[in-house]
Length: 530
Ligand code: G3I
Ligand code: 9MR
Ligand code: ZN
Image (cartoon, rainbow, N blue to C red; front, top):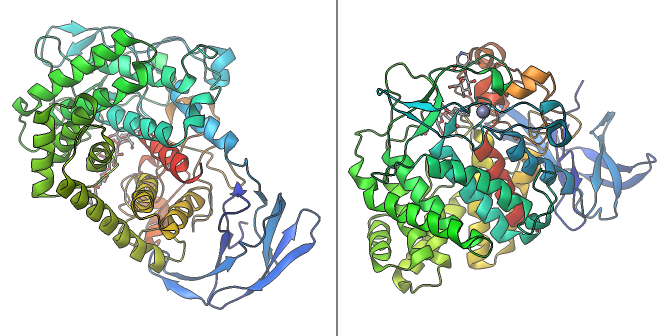
């Protein structure tokens, strides 16, 4: 039986705020016990408050004054929390496994036992793929499997890499992590090697003749819970899309500076690819965004609103290359509307950061507009954060498919406001989003596989299911009150929004994993924990 005390199951760094949540209608006395069971702190919780997301009452137990390194539990009456640590290095191991996930998702290459352990497999998905509706076959090997499925999607890839680049910008020590990949030990950092694996695949998805970018390559449908080399159906390349082409342009432009010091020719290839994609993206007009062509049923990443992708691309190309054209186009977009988003669907915040960090000239008025809008965005999130007993910037309507990505994303918006204003409260709030992910949530689960005490055991992830062991280091989607799969309907009907989560293999809408959920978490961790 799980207790009603919710903590970050990894723990807390000595000087960080430390709060446990207890579910109950009255304020309580709580104790912090050390490893020997001795009480090191005794206090009274906050008053109880109703929570529309859980349809329950909770109190907060603030024990921030416990700073000594050690292992602790929280005790309320005769209930005890899971044990957690106070220490400076508590996130090192989780970060490493969150990073290694990308390696383990590699497609089109053999993963050996030495580097992949039980998830080793021969090369997969390496036959030429049919361009949808034609007799033309194209070689598009490589890249990472997107998620619990084995598809490869440009939209997902681009935002994943954008978040990883921001993670590096905020915490350079990530470049020193030994990811234990076959290429480890080279002059170029492991993380850049791993990212290049995805970039090389993305480059293959751009049409040489036109510069347009194909939306995705997958089989026509989803396979069973088998290892990737057994998915043998024909690979299909789906048509070009504006979303994919704009995201591709932005991502390639962003990548240039990271690789220029190591491989000039590669950097130049990406610069060229970015410019060509940008130049042609608006010619791809599919009304209402990309939709699956007949006969294909894999993920769509459909996005009816494609202006933010162009906005992001304009900013990123300006930052990388300094041409007036990109500047003017971005500023025009901003003058119409400042947009936001660090997700696969809404990507504009990446553009805002690019414009604000370029070394080329910027317009003061545009800079002010961006900064103000970003702080306004964070202030709206702060209101939700203050109203939410679990100290996340969510209300009861925010628990949608991939809610954990939006948790990470909101944390990054709060961090942006911290950078702009210098106000510590944004940073503290952003960190609470990490505490939520690691177990201080009403599901009472640490949402990263292989981490914590109350773990996720049955992620919707084909290799994990095939091997019968959850691969470590994967952020799962989290509660989705939309009940988008039969298991969620069966297990969660009638539950409050924040509780609509089920650790079932078939619950893809609450328990799947993706590359861009992991990258969103890594970006936030790099921002607020370094
Ligand atoms: O944007 C609306 C929002 O306005 C509304 O309030 C809310 C209410 O439900 O819905 C929001 O849209 C949801 C959207 O995700 C938000 O990101 C849709 O209902 C929901 O269906 C959609 O889910 C997406 C899902 O694919 C289905 O299309 C997930 O974001 C997306 O991460 C997921 O991606 C899949 C790939 O297709 C295939 N590979 C696995 C991957 C992860 O599950
Ligand atoms: O495994 C698929 C997962 O990656 C997708 O996110 C999800 C929604 O598109 O679909 C999953 O596949 C399921 C399919 O949609 C319905 N039949 C069962 C499949 C496996 O659970
Ligand atoms: Zn594969």
